[in-house]
Length: 441
Image (cartoon, rainbow, N blue to C red; front, top):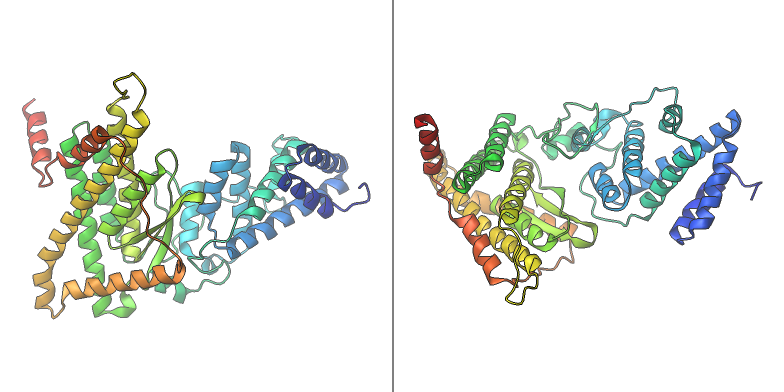
């Protein structure tokens, strides 16, 4: 083994991880670390590891994964050190392409993940981490673990052009424009710099403000009213974009797109139901890939941003109310908290879906006369867009099956969850009353 090249040793280490031979993996990692004792050896090892990770990352893109997806898998299965290396690896590989040849939504993901190429051009990320003080053995063990993850990710649906192949034409077709490439990310409060030309940033900001108020208030009626206001804004904006797309196809929002949204345990079934409900209320479809912990939402760009924002907010609100209900026990003192919470979330998802659709239907009805006065029939237009979404789902997921995402095993949880979604007024009266109370106080 002493005569093996560094590339051979890297491959051997990954095979050991795949075979769950921990001692063999450790032996190879130590051997690679020992070769880093000399400057020439360190350069050879660094080159082999970095290049292997670049090739593996390019392979991941080929198999349908995007930056946020890869990071999500790292969070699910690896430690903090490996998660940080994943971000470096993704930034490094994407940094090799001209910014305009990478799907703008990918840059948006990098921004939300708050990652970037932070190391100087004269160094690789591996060398830069070594200079920060991390020892070679720790660095190599972490990097090889990430390499194993990348090489073992299965193939999934490809939702966007591969890096290096995107063009301004494909960006327009997808409804996106690149407005920043300084980094990538998919978490936190931001949505990234690459937004659809038809996803009005002013609308999104108003939606965020309403949802933030819904999450922060202690009054359930207020929360529901703010949420309904956000849905109304999003529905109205979606209708405007649909009408524009019919009048001016070249200025429209292109073909349906896909976004992956994480759905984590516990209670992943009810959470998937909530995402399905939010997607349906916003003219989208959701396909759940349970084994990989995400749902793929398919729809037009003007609707996809809305679904992501609303689902995240509703999940926060649902969890807050569910936890406020406390634990439950049966008549024998045995815990039934899990069944209660699962049923709570399932009922919450169903009723919220009904209420969101009511809001969207009301906005559609209100907008129809003005559209008709301009010679446009809104209902057939929206139906045609739904057909395009369904066709895209059929193309990407030809074997998709409809199935139940969870059963109700606790009657109290069901009724309490439905009540939590049903108590509030959606006409704004709760907010006005609350404001009046504050002013009088």
